[in-house]
Length: 241
Ligand SMILES: [Zn+2]
Image 1 (spheres, rainbow, N blue to C red):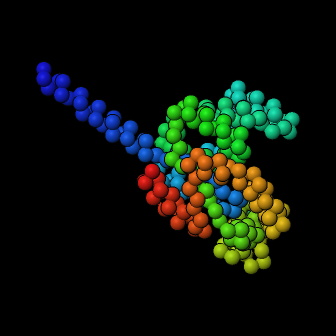
Image 2 (cartoon, rainbow, N blue to C red):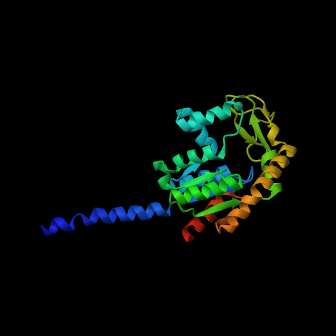
Image 3 (cartoon, rainbow, N blue to C red):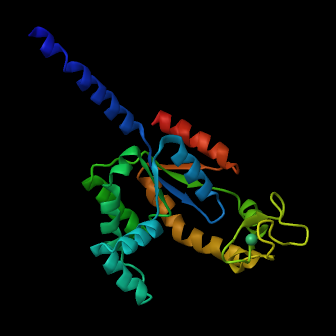
């Protein structure tokens, strides 16, 4: 009889250990200008601990595709060419953050973009009892970003769209795509002028966010130009927090 009482203790201990592991999983926001390597960093981080990458674009597309009530509402705005209001985005975010895969951790990519969104997100996270580890601010020098983006070439075949870099991964010597032979082109939004514009817009919109998270005591800036190095630094910071 005594034995029976002792046995159930083992599964209980295992459950406790699992809970501890889950808490260690990262819950972060990723801020960075176009060309700062946000996509690469996010991908490397999700591979590290199985956390999921969440962007408002993905949430919107998924909700519209699944035809959920929120998705249908959002589609109405999109069909009229209007911006989806923050309140609706927050309701979608609330649903998304409660899906089971988020228990492994998440990386918010490109959200929030504005102070009202950051304030709404703060309230939502408090409501869901989720504590962020920190906000990763990728700070890559402007000339590095310019060099990265102006050297990109994209296959003009809409079914291929293979991406090249004239320095590190060039197309064929005559500028054609290695995969399908179509000409490669420089996209309109990847000319020097367009990139400088995009960077300026980003800085105008994001500078207040950086201040916001600094005041919240959550901001951590990473300025390595290598995505792999940034990821190592983020992992180290996660272990310390
Ligand atoms: Zn191609």
